[in-house]
Length: 256
Image 1 (cartoon, rainbow, N blue to C red):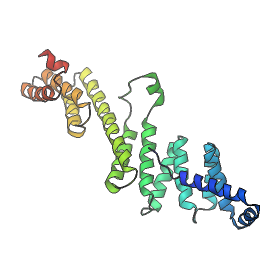
Image 2: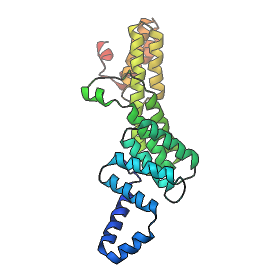
Image 3: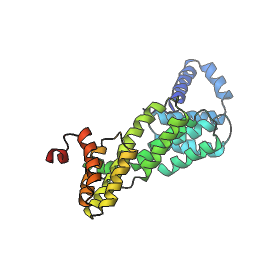
Image 4: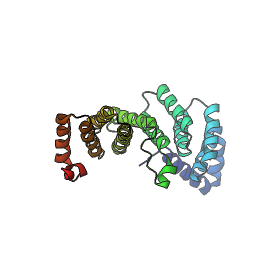
């Protein structure tokens, strides 16, 4: 779900165009009364409607520089946020979002800005090439996923009634799995180097912070194996009990 703020303006521009085409005398009057910024903004919206996002981004950036204040200012800023997201201009999008929130903390569309910041960070973290190739890269840097998680969590907490809250909650669930996978990748790294205490601690971290994710099963298995290597039978048995109760088909349980 991505209900951006551009749609209403595209529709309005289209309706306006039909109205102008329907009556030449009325068109002449409107052309006289419309201001330069209205003409230019309409042109940018037409570019968006035609899929010319790069051109629209250029047009709106020029408008933003020329008219930093006024009735179109906030909408232009929001449009640019969306366009930079669509164009994968991560740094520009994040800078625009932070600037908008900083300058307009009580604006009615702050929830949208937060939602977009989450989307931008989530997309930045996503590596399309590895996904297409089917390569598991759960060990890659997760800092952007962590930022996206913070953004969506802030949105849900501060604006629970927002139209974007429901989708943000779904994305939080997916991000939790991503962050849990990162922890498990680190735990496996420690296992390979026989740093069993560090591996067990990573497993415990997953249980504590990502208990509702599928990654819990592997976290418990790592804890069982690590405590076994550390010759800590009580801790091993505690982890095994939880593993057995929740994942009876796990290989470690079946092997007993």
